[in-house]
Amino acid sequence: MSKQPFDNKANESDTQRRQFLKRGLATGALASLPSWALPALAAGEELIPFSDMPKDFARGEAQPGAMHFQDTRKISRFYSRNEDFYVVQHYGQPDLDPNTHQLSISGLVDKPLNLSIDDLKQYKQVEMDIGFECGGNQQRLFHGLIGNARWKGVRLKDVLKDSKLQQSAREIVFFGADAGEETVRDNKVMQHFGRSLSVEEAMESNALLALEMNGEPLPLFHGKPVRLIVPGWYGVANVKWLERIHVQDTRYMGRFMAKDYVTLKKDPLNPDTWVQSSVSRMHMKSVIVRATQNSGSFVFTGFVVNDGSKLDRVEVKLDNGEWQTAKWHKENSRYSWKLFSFETNKLPPGEHTIVSRVIDRAGNIQPTLEEAPEKATYWENFAQQPRTFTV
Ligand SMILES: Nc1nc2c(c(=O)[nH]1)N[C@H]1C(S)=C(S)[C@@H](COP(=O)(O)O)O[C@H]1N2
Ligand SMILES: [Mo]
Image 1 (cartoon, helix red, strand yellow):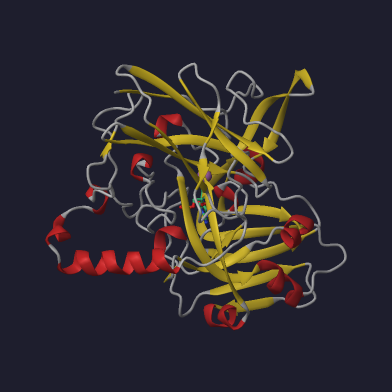
Image 2: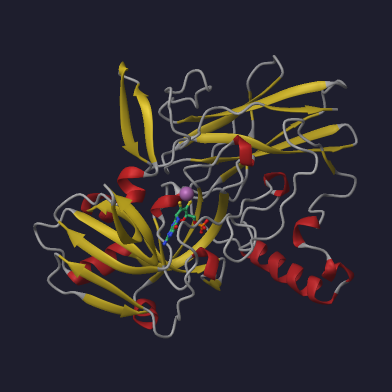
């Protein structure tokens, strides 16, 4: 059984490979090809199409103003390129000037702050590998609302400590610069995108005020010039274009906390009752997204996301066979996505089904769709995901 490494070590070789690729593209014959058309396959290796996926399914790079999801069959590297990382926004993409942008910290603090990007750079900078998916990620998009990157910035708790939270502080609300009109009981009001953490969650979460993504200043699509990243939480927690942090003594009830991104499900402890919960920590999930073959040998690759709890293993089942342990990718760390692969050379011609499940060290097993709590909303799809293909 291969154990998962949980350190957050640097990966120089990947950065070097990326720089090499960039240089090659700038001068080489491949310069005119869109990046997703690059083979990223070994000699003789070919992608096997999934039969549950449309044949003409393809994605390019993220485009300004648009939602973007990855073509997950193309996942062949640990860090998503910034251009491939999924993009979701609800009120557009404000283009803030990093030279004049100010992040304010207001409310129940002894020392309200107004921090420029340069001020934020004076704090100790930390780097973390963090992967996350949108709470709405699903099979219809072949789980493409996903990405994994190295983020660099300031620890949220360092800034909060500086602003000196008052005794009565309960909730920290994070507002983006983007805003839109919302209707609350027939009243039309402008609202900024906002999400909150309790003071406890904020102090314990290892959350980052991120200024860089994969060694570059935060790209526009991903929250330039500063965003919150809460490792282990669904993407909605990671407020982009961060403008204001407000500390209060009541619950924050904005749209993306208490109305939208709210799961309506049957209470597992009391199946007669429907309960609502705000999309927060990521459920443990694995999904197979890529299949390749090379002279009679087959490789299946997938990703795992979870809340940072310790994992034990991922298992893969082919057709009606036994569950077999897959191999963890060596770069996986606590809050990154966790890539895994499974190899076999025993596949007779015909239609096949493959499914994966992840198991944590506490013995929890990723459920099948039938075993997962029944839900009415489409958020939080973490059930086992069978995939089909033909050889
Ligand atoms: N300011 C702001 N932050 C936001 C959003 C938004 O609409 N506005 N969308 C959230 C949602 S729902 C997701 S899934 C993630 C997506 O982050 P990404 O586009 O960098 O992948 O950003 C979150 N942060
Ligand atoms: Mo999302």
